[in-house]
Image (cartoon, rainbow, N blue to C red; front, side, top):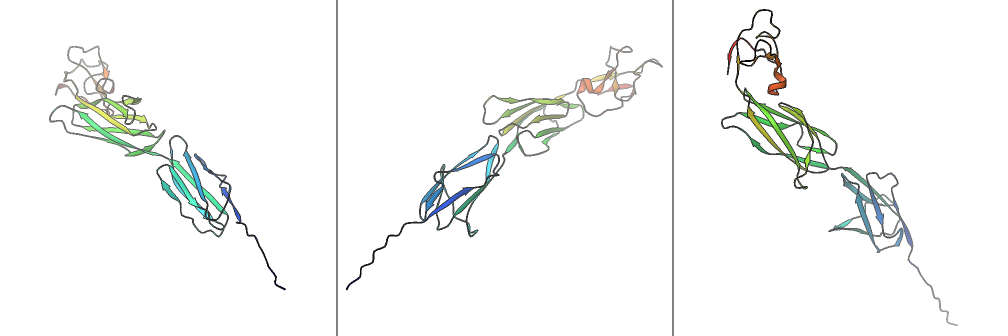
Length: 231
């Protein structure tokens, strides 16, 4: 007597799990279980000011599974094992560019920032090294991708600071000549006598007037002013 055997095989369904400690962004999958050969679509979303640094899909045997990205679509093909997904989102670095310097002809200068790139919220310092009797008088920081939007700048003289926004920035600076000052000896015992550290007297204003050099010139360092003409 002949014997007929019939059997039905079904595809094994494997699980897809996402790491629970992912921060500064999210990973979503269109399926939480799938059979071998199924295309799994991932949705990757970073928080504002962060960017995806790494995305790893591994099988249960710790083998890395190839991930394909095409445009805004990210996917992988389900292997014959359970899958684990992990991702790292890092604070995005934005560029800092000194775009333009307005200055008087013949002026020697060097304007720089302490960093070339920075993350959101970082304090960036702008420093100007100018010829003697020239000073950084104005700084405007623009968000590069937001036309006309400026960033608040703090400080005076040859050192200014600003807080990095969620954008690349362009820096525009102006360097001007400090007006000429004239100095003569003051009567002995007069407060602010010429030669006193970090003070000066402007022509026609002594002996009553004595002003801090920082307040007028915007210079950050103190200087000694001596009697006589000062160019």
